[in-house]
Every structure is written in C-alpha cells, then in structure tokens.
Image 1 (cartoon, helix red, strand yellow):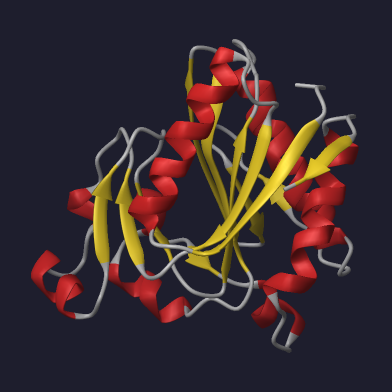
Image 2 (image 1 turned 90 degrees about the vertical axis):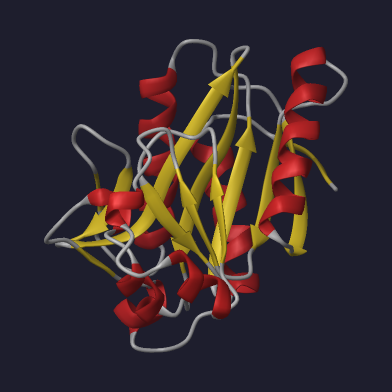
Length: 215
C-alpha cells in the first residue's frame, strides 16, 4: 500500500460506465500492466446495494426512483445501501492491499479525516464498520471490495450533495443516524474542484507514497 499511484479524473460519469472503468483498471493493476490508480468521479443520482443487500432499507418504490432519474445497481462492495449523486466526490482507489483490508479501511478514513481537518472540522472514523462522522452525521461513506489482493470501490465525500436524496434510503442501514455535507458544515457551498487536490495530497501523506503521474 506504499507504491506510487496515478490519478485519473473521470469527471461527471454515469455509474455503470465508471464501474466498467473500475473493473478494467482493477484487471490491469492485478496483471501489473498499470500502477495503482485513484479514480475520482462525480455521478448522476444512483443508489447501490452492497453485499449485505439493503433493499429493506429502501424507503420508496424502485419505480419512483427510476421516474426521478435514479439508477439502481447491486455491486460487489461491502456494506448496505448507499446513495451517490451530483455534488459528491467519489473516489475509487485501485490499490494493492493484500489481506490488510481492515488497515486499508482505517487508512481511507484517515485520509478523509485529514481533508476535513484542513477546514477546521473534527471528524472520526467508525468502530466496527467504515465511514467518517461529524457527531451523529455521516459525511463520508466508505465501502470497498478486494479481489486478488487489489481493492476497488471506495469512498463518497458529501461536498455540496442534495441531502434530501438520502431520505429515500436508510443510509448504510443505520437507523437513527443522519448525513451531512462539507458545505452544510461550513455554511457555504464548496466545489469538488477545490477538494480534489486536498484529497490527493492526503492520500500521499497517509499512504506514505508519491504521486507518480496525474492522468
């Protein structure tokens, strides 16, 4: 987990297409044809279900979501149901983590904690599961998969996300918990463009490695 990595900014991309990019990149890293890669992306509205399923934590009918322009996917990551959408910075680190999955999750949390600290926000990781919280509200969701010792899927940082969209689900299946965003916490709208270099810099610090190339 200390190898030089590259960054690919996918911009605003449909979830299915970005998922395909993840799988292609993962295969290339496994083969040794590509260095570890951090994919950054922003998605149209989408709800995904992890290995735990989570359809019981969907609070509206799937037909309604489709009519509102949401996509729905069952995916390989750990965890329950989650939401991605505009104003959310999503990152997919395709890193060689071996069997140190728990350590890797804690490192992802630390990356996010350091990014938030740059704005004077104190946050904490989750005991027993992954994510980053400010008080009772989750600001970063984390859900990963590891196949052939290489990670994929990753984190979703709410920057200026429409938090009302989370009302359609029980986020991560956690009752009685809230969600928040960086913009809400700071009382001003923040941009993904401002956050990206901070996230990349935090990855370099936490993973104690250098950025090889920005692609």
